[in-house]
Image 1 (cartoon, rainbow, N blue to C red):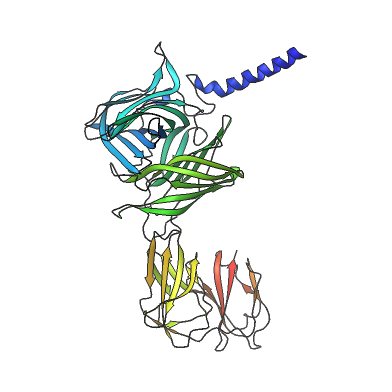
Image 2 (cartoon, rainbow, N blue to C red; image 1 turned 60 degrees about the horizontal axis):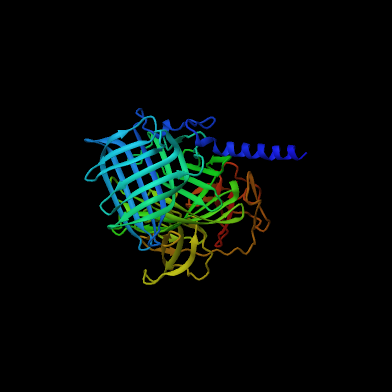
Length: 533
């Protein structure tokens, strides 16, 4: 019995060890994958662009200071160069950001494994390669990195601790309108070595994230995006994309919303069912670019509720184009359990102040029974705005608040303080959550207030929301009266004769949305809001 028991335990341990270590043997190709190792760590001659990306968080052994860095090599021929290299180092204690982007030529760029040697313009030779043992054999998923800039440099060794994460479940993604990319991430790598900054060199340890992409998805010329990598304290890692169309929308599908998660050695997945809310924004010093700076990520898958926050405001790269690349912190819950974490954000999408115009009232009169409406002229799916509404009856000398935080672009104002014939002006202020993005619209001319709304007949509509037929609670005068269905922009979409207004009203033809039923009682118009399903 004991022999059988110990054999069972030994078999289980061997099985688990073999399963968790199968990726540490070259060649390695995950089942069903478009990626194989070490071949796809190297150059792909048939692809127009590719890059080798590494970002990490380090701690100095002597100073105790923390640093973050990003190193990327691009293959993207231009002029007489093969591509370019970006090396950024941030002193987290001071927030000082040292960035350098330089063109390069590759002296070695292997197509069989990772072996990069590059002559970076104005710098010494740099390299990023697979480590080899004493017999010259590749050591799977272990690397040496040497790179230097005017401010400092890296001399690091990286060792992957987890099997590669394959976005799209097989390492291939369609991204944006008509682009594709082959893609894998090494989400957790132990880092040791030396960091030099401003002439001071010290030993460092830490962790890094490695990303590899090759295909025709091009951050220099394609659709703008916000990308995040998250390393959580529960062992879960997340690779996250929101890609924007040229109209600044984020379509609700897997080409534009991509969340790839490493859960454990046996579980990873890719979904598009998640939401990112922008909670704060960050203007650059010259006010030319504004990036998001704080986010809330939620998803029903694993019940994610995470807050991601930029560690430093000054992490913008200016060449070969402007974008933000900086370290982040993470806090929140996964499946109800508290987690913390670190990561990086790469932000190519820049935000503008909202611009808007008031649509209604736009004539000589203001009918208080109709909604005030306005239009956001530069909508952006990543920049939610809320609206504050004010009015003035003293020729814009003072404005009095009506309501704050309206989410729609219309508002029905139930007000009894106005007098018939008052000249009224409206001011609409659109603001981001943190107020960093702001736009104001004021009526171009005043409108005279019409007689107010007095519903002495206690009229109600039902059902609400409605699908096909709308009914009114009895209370109308016996002779009936005309009615109108009005959309949120104040447009009349249907006139209802008096002989029908007290019966069922067909609304089946309407598109889903919010509408108003205006009943023109003599001197006492009544407006009732309803929702069409």
